[in-house]
Amino acid sequence: MGEPAINELEFLAEILRKHPTDSLRKIAEEEGMDYYRLKRMYDRYYGKYISVNAMYNIRVIGLRSYLAFLGVPSERILEVGYRMTQNPFVAYVNPAFGFKNGLSAIIYVPDDQRDDIDEMLSRYSDDYEYHEVRAYPYSGDDNFGEWTLAYEYAVLMDILKVDARTPVTKIAERLGKTRPTVKFMINRLREMGILISFEPTVDNNVHDRSVLGITETLDESVLERFREYEITVGVFPGRGYVLEWFFSSKEDLGTKILEFSSYVDRILISYFDPTFKELNDRNSINVYSRIVKKDGSGYRSILEF
Image (cartoon, rainbow, N blue to C red; front, side, top):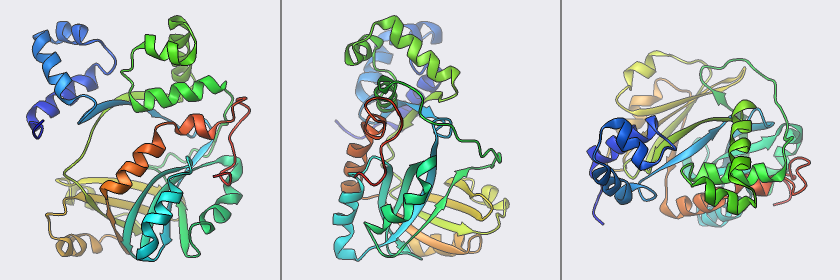
């Protein structure tokens, strides 16, 4: 199959944003579209270039999000990255170079295991730093819940995170439940504030680099200044901000650094390597069913892996 037609991919993403879990026939009917045209487009792109994924509020289930940077010798980056992606509490790892040469990682840590972060990271490197990160703008909410659900909910969350359009019948077979029970479980996740939404995600083959910057103060004009770029902002509560700009390796790296350096105190370049993407994707398939204890009594230790 050739490269995707961007206009078709964007059109499908917009349709799935409005109808994330509806059947194709229902979507075609409500949108006044030709069903067979929609189906051809869907069959061409879905599961290859685009998917619909569940978005969760992990604070409700007692997970804190951290951004970690590890100094790792270049000849050991793949080996250490592989070991890190065997740990389901490590959400994402990529090679990175700048104020720390080695790896950058996103890790999720149960609220009651924060004291174990240093021991966890020291298993991968003697040279590391980490920062708790929250969504921007920061609400100030520091109330963290805990895992109080049966283990089957962890399996369900994994299924919906990978593909929220998985038919309820297939989910019911996987869980050994009835269709009404699965629908009840999904509604319960919503009512508890764990399941926020279902969102289409486009596999980004364009942006294979990012400039990540840390700053004590945020100049909000940067959001307008670089509006044409894909940019994300995170908050280090009480300590500063992290800004990340995504771009293509075809663009000039030096120019990017010069453009963004005036807005941040420290800079690091992340490389979205295909090998690491495969490792990260494999690690993310069944995260919740690996971090939750089989008896549903809470989380396993971040030091088990």
